[in-house]
Structures are given as C-alpha cells and as structure tokens.
Length: 352
Image (cartoon, rainbow, N blue to C red; front, side, top):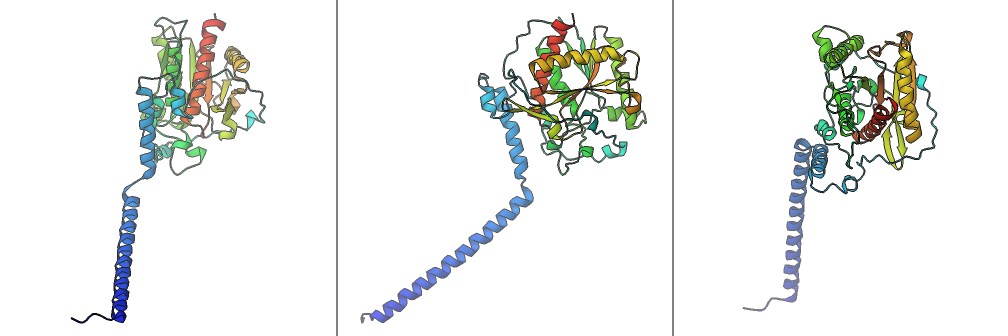
C-alpha cells in the first residue's frame, strides 16, 4: 500500500474538523431546543413565587419549633418582634382629619382576591415573642378583656395578588381578625385574661340580609351577648386597620418598622367622655414609653359616621386601629406586643 500524500492527509484533517464542527453545531442546537422546552414547561407548570413563599413558611415553622430559642431574633433576620425601649423624637405631618374610609358593597365580597401567600394564617399563628414574658400579675382565670372586629374582613395589600387599591383590601381569611388573635395571645402572656371574637361579620350580615353599614349593629350584638355571659369583662376593644398607605401607618424605630396605632372615640352618646379618658390614659403611656407609635385620638360624632361605635357598652370601650393596608405581619406583630405591654400596665397599675 502506497503511503498517502501530505495533501490528502491535509484534506482528511479538514474533513474531520468540518464534521466535528457540524456535530457540535447540531448538539448545541439540540441543547438549546431542550433548554427552551424546559423553560417553557417550568413557566407553565411551576410557580417560583409559590415555592419561595412555602420555603418562607417552612422557615418560620422550623425556627419557632426549634429547641433553641435564645437567638430567635437573630435567626429570623429581619422578622424579629423584640420590643425595645424606644428613643423616638420624630414628628410627622399627619392630619388625622385626612383619613379615608371605605364601605364596600356586600357583592364586592363575593369576588375575593387571591392570596399572594397561601399560608398567611400560619405566619400569624407562628408569630411569638422572642423573649419569655414574666407575668408578675394575673387575672387568675377571669376574662376581663374582649377583642372583636366590626370590619372583620379588613385585609392587607402585601398579601393580596393583583391589587394595590385600599378599597379592594378585604379577605375572608387574611384579615384583621388575625391581628386580634396576635393581640389576644400577647395579653394572655402578660396575665390579662382575654376573649378574642373572630366572628366573620360579613357572614352574619348575609345571614340577616343586612348591608355593610349595619356592621356595628351586628358586632354590638356579639359584644353585648359576651357581656351578659361574662360579668368580669371590663375592657372592650374593637380592632381595625386604617385605610391609609404606609407613609401614614408605619414608623421606623431602632431600625425596625412598626405599624402605627390610632384610637377612635365616638362622641354620639352621653358618656363618651369616659371612653375618651380611657383612650387618653393609654395614649399618655404610649407617648411616655414609645413616642410616635400612636398617631393620637380621633373623636367622631354621629354626623361623621356611626358616632357611637358600641362604646356605650363600657367606659373602657374603644376602637383601636393597628397599622393600615400596607403593613406586614411583622410590623403588625411588633405593635401588638407593645400595645399589650401598655394595656397590661394600665390594667394592673393605672386603673386600680
């Protein structure tokens, strides 16, 4: 066999390289098609936001269920609920009369918004104080405080999909009743026996064929029924959230955001000054210890709304607004812990 010429060898080498390039090109095309199909499949079947949310919920569960709780606030990395002594000297240009309120139609509750976090109630449920609270006082089994929610479906925009409108911030699960539960647990840990009524007022209105503006009538019936059944009840707090945005309902203190508080007193009944005195005493404690957290007290007569707000039930009856439509679970929780401190201090020291 005669040896091949250098020219033939060179041609063969070129053909091999050309063949290899074609193979690599085809392989690259196949890989690109596979990648494109994979991305399309993931986009159709997989919701990364949902996975992220579930991971967040799992993180909360694992942290709160772990044996080691000493460094819980460090583990939460921004979700801490510690309530330090606050040094706040800020002033805000807040005009209380500028508040806005909405009265949705009953039909609007039928088209409920989808939640951005499906397990939002689990987040509220697992919010616990990162420090042990020593209750040096107790009501010794007596339930002396009643929490209820006239506008029970008031919700929070961070947890509702496809809306940024305050007038659409209503939900049957992710709503203000979860904040009431937070406050109730915080008070119980401080020795204040508390009943939390999480009745869905919208359902009650539907059952009675009433409109939304009858909400205070329905919640008042519940509160009076509780009062008849339990003569130990002394304090009645109707918990709401404000309809204003975060610039009016959030304050930063010691590097953490807190949902601001607001008291509403109805002047449409003869003994409203007793309710007003109660609110002022709480406001004084807040101003002394947590200056800036509370926006103050609004007095509203019958020409500005309901006017009574069921506050004729007891001299220690108020509306408490905690945060607004833009506040998060963490911000709301921090503020409920503070208010529980203030309210327990009032009950065990100031009231007696």
